[in-house]
Length: 120
Image 1 (cartoon, rainbow, N blue to C red):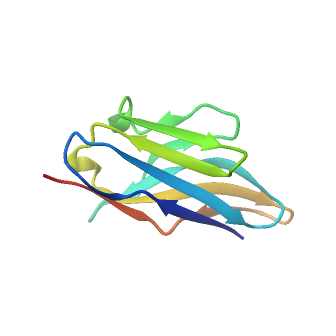
Image 2 (image 1 turned 90 degrees about the vertical axis):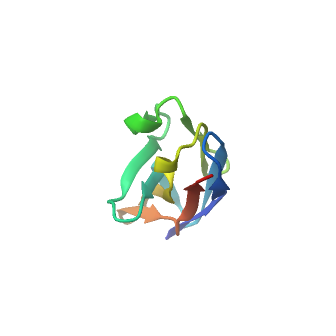
């Protein structure tokens, strides 16, 4: 089973920047299809922030367009999220996500989550 490990969360002031990174490991012979980032704020449902299909173009949550940029390194099996002009509404636990295909099945892998807090 593929495992996802996130890093890069923390506390930042409004208007600041953070970079989240996620590396996929394990899983034997597997294909990482779409990879992306979701977030969940207290009392709210988990929502898609940004995703990038294998070899495709990224899609973003409307409220982060122009501020966040998702990127993949296919050789290193990583996905990153550069977050600029952060606002308090961006405060949430951010989760890395990957749609995986192996020899037997398709499944979705999740990271453990990393906290992003935007506050003065």
